[in-house]
Length: 369
Image 1 (cartoon, rainbow, N blue to C red):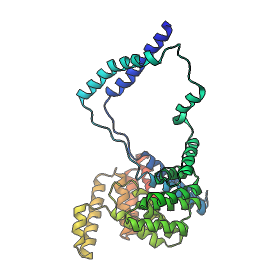
Image 2: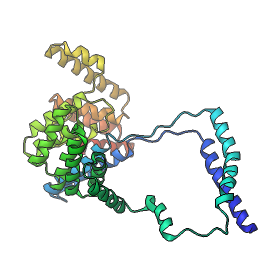
Image 3: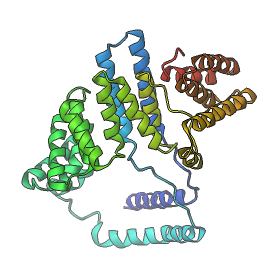
Image 4: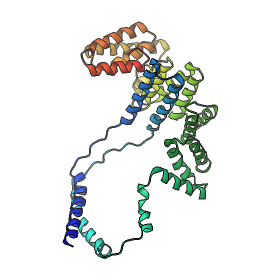
């Protein structure tokens, strides 16, 4: 009996420590974009394999669509942010942990936790295992619920993305249709439906998928996923110029820190569209609207030359070199782009990591890294 109480005391101490430990540590911001970086690396690897002939064009296209789908799915995914802590509330929480946890444990154990209390039947205990069931079992439970409640739009909305993640695309298409029918027609649901249809077709944006993306854009002209896939549909149809036009429009409207910008830059490079001109501030963009085409061109050339001058002073800025090369390509000055590329390699020649980043970036631009 003493051994049992000793074990209970150890468990109580462990519970208190588990509460106090995070209270004694400052919040640390979590890194952002790591999953997106993995997907972008995978896209770059597919491009290298396709260039060397390790995989065929069809397989490369399907792989790009699947990885792009996963990357775009991260756009709307919420990121955790650390909450500010307050010393007074920390102390109060610590006091509750030190005093409240043992008192609550004893108060609960005395009437319910006697060692002589008979065990629960197996069937009763199995009811608490739901949270540990495999995902397939949980999906099956939701499906049984929807068989009994087929008009539950929220249930279909929950089930559809899970089926897509499991690779059950045909079932996901049906679930998205039902989520729209019973949950309401939205741009996001139409875009997700089109994505599932394309995935079921092996990455090909079929006419049916394209129609869903067009409906999504009609509901929301800024729907990112639908716009990207409409560009992909144009690329697959052999209309590279149309694809580049769609993707350039996306970049023009997007904030500079949009996590999907690198994906669209790579898509533009793939169709020979280069990239967008150097990013302008909101004030500069507003001023540029009232300029003539000649003045606007002069302003952009001035920005590019200032960037080039800065890089001559600080050649370690790999991203700056890549922006400069992109800008010269967009301006149609391939000689300056080639010169900037050579200068960039010379500037980072003694730093293996920066040289690797530079070569990877050049490959993403469609240049020889």
